[in-house]
Length: 425
Image (cartoon, rainbow, N blue to C red; front, side):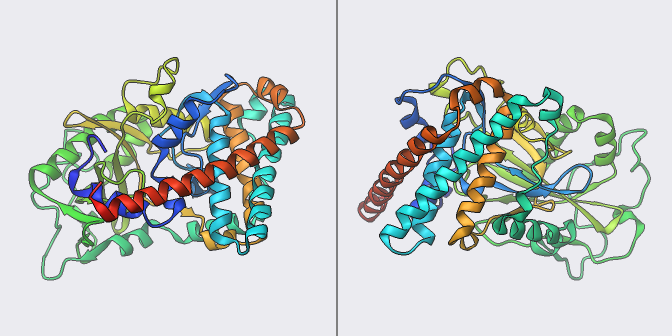
């Protein structure tokens, strides 16, 4: 919790105490320490670092198509490829225990899911090892839409338009003519800016809007703090490609909010900026998310990640994903480092209830194939494929690890719950 906002530490522990899987989501630092004392293959690729079943999702590619891929890279770093697979294996077992029924059925469901994930990973890596490198780098996984949990996430992503986000996070400002951005510093008004001299709100009618507060998860930010958030977008804008700088310059900031996100990131500083482009029907939401060192960094001294943790996340994401957010970047504010990305732009995640029964095994295969592609793009698929061979023995070993680590996670979760009954953590 070092460096996190004290007022949110209790909320983070409250969220982690909800279930063993919720604890697991917030405890990347724990598994990083545990993995560091176990034997490793020494075969290095870019790690997602937080590979679990909820950290894959659907989002919009730069050309507007919906894609499904690994979607969270806060802990990304270069390290032994199997660390991602071990964290994924443990998460699959925890989910099997959450959605299954009957002890024997749960154990079988969990084992089958982990084996399916790892065998698909091994098969994918063998295929990548035979491909020309350029073909491997642009390989698209075409079967993922056939898995029902992924299909459901894609459907949600299709509905998650910027207009939907506008309705979800903002509200009209009644009885307030013009723009509610009064008090925000100038944006894009330097000489030559496309916005120079343009009327606010694109000159089109419509009730002004601003963030609607749902404390503590969403709180409006004003005054000097809002000015600092917007000022941090200056360095970010300069590091974007010229055509994306121009695109961003067409939008005016309307409002700023502080947002609580996820489980692992609770307590870190996370801001959202609501922009408007060509009228009220053209919203853009940027998330400015604090990034600290990867939980794995203390155990990987040879990794040499960038000193800026926002940049570390961006570069790790681009290394593993085939297509990334076109507005992905980084900045700094008050001595802290931040990632910048679009908020909820056609994003959709997995619902755990969709993973009951055969859904978990089908989804596990998708997880395995996407991890294989990410590791092949950022590592050496020939070496990984040679180590894995047919993959059967490796799959059985990870199924055993996943089961044992799920038991340990449940014990840790119970310990957290006991501690919270006796004293504040």
